[in-house]
Amino acid sequence: MTHAATRWHVSHRRRIEYDILSAPDLLDPGNPALLSSGRSNPGRRFVVVDEHVAQHCSAALDTYFAQHGIEARIVRFPGGEAAKTMDAWLGILHELDAFPIHRRDEPIIAIGGGVLTDVVGFVASSYRRGMPHIKVPTTLMGYVDASVGIKTGVNFNRHKNRLGSFEAPRQVLLDRAFLTTLPHRHILNGVCEIIKLAVIKDVALFEQLEQHGTDSIASCFQSDHGGRILDRAISGMLEELQPNLFENELARNVDFGHTFSYGLETHHEERLLHGEAVLLDIAVSVLIARRRGLLDAVEVERVFALIAALGITLDTGVLDTDLMWHSLLDRIEHRNGWQRVPLPDGLGHCVFVNDINPAEITASIESLIARTSRQHDPVLEC
Ligand SMILES: NC(=O)c1ccc[n+]([C@@H]2O[C@H](COP(=O)([O-])OP(=O)(O)OC[C@H]3O[C@@H](n4cnc5c(N)ncnc54)[C@H](O)[C@@H]3O)[C@@H](O)[C@H]2O)c1
Image 1 (cartoon, rainbow, N blue to C red):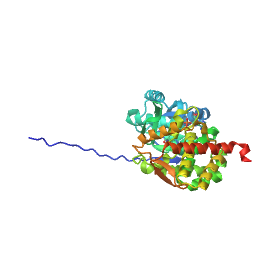
Image 2 (image 1 turned 180 degrees about the vertical axis):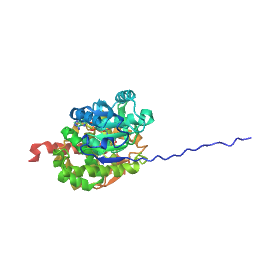
Image 3 (image 1 turned 30 degrees about the horizontal axis):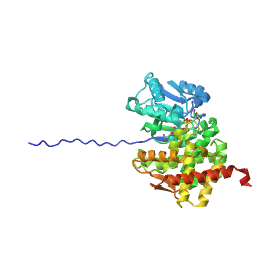
Image 4 (image 1 turned 180 degrees about the horizontal axis):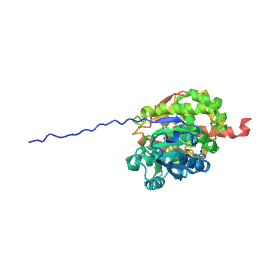
């Protein structure tokens, strides 16, 4: 007698909802935003704050929690890519385990750049299989990119973000005053991600950068124009992330600049910041797009003129076909078997290609180096 196969099928949908809120004067005790989610008075909070940020605001943080009757454990964390390790992740987990907090109504608070929010997000997703967390970005990279989505992670085995999770924050609180203490190089680092969005999907943002980018950078994005650029960048980022939060669709236009950059920043960790590697990738990709007739000469000149006007120098000395080709090969695994490289098809528009070859990369590197050396050669400028 045959036994009928028994089968159980489980299907479940989990709704993802979170707010990204403008929260000026976040550490003013009169501002309830930081405690607006979860239990307070009494209540506890486990807070991880970037070491450089703590130099400016640790007294304000202490005062804030004291005035709200919150018992806070404030852990300082060094920023920088070198800190994005499994050891760092475990270190925070040990601290958290020594400061018990409610599993649902005492969210972990992460105040820092993309490194800190990625690591703390991963802590939140793994401790007790998931604790709520709140992100407060303090770098431009965090403000327009790292804090906006749901990806967390640490570097592993010499690969960037190789371990991580999708973990939605409960809230993202935006106070751009944090940017005023950020070193200039890190402001430009974040600007590179804004340029990415402008080139690949938003020509109006590109124009905003052309008209107000330099002044916005000079004011660390504290001006009205600077605020509008930030708002537009976040809106554009969310337009892309929200319908594809878990990256079921692997052809993503926000991956523009994130193909060759992957290998460049891993091999030159001491030399390149994430955004700097992304902008090098963008520059090479724009020249690939030009060679394929996707961009015309005027559009290419606009991109390079914008980069120069914003005061960004491309570190072309790191460009190397072999390294970039192998980076593309790794991305093929990541993108499930296809290159799926986004290229601009006219400014503000995107196509995906699957047939980039090493010779094309070499030719584009050569024309980028020729172009940048022309810019820097005073004899040729005459
Ligand atoms: N999760 C995502 O979707 C996502 C998206 C983009 C980037 N990232 C990740 O973000 C990371 C880069 O982020 P980042 O550029 O913010 O780096 P970071 O967090 O290392 O911060 C850069 C530097 O600025 C310091 N700092 C932070 N805030 C400051 C402030 N207000 N004043 C003075 N100094 C301050 C930090 O200590 C650090 O030295 C990368 O690891 C990248 O992979 C993640």
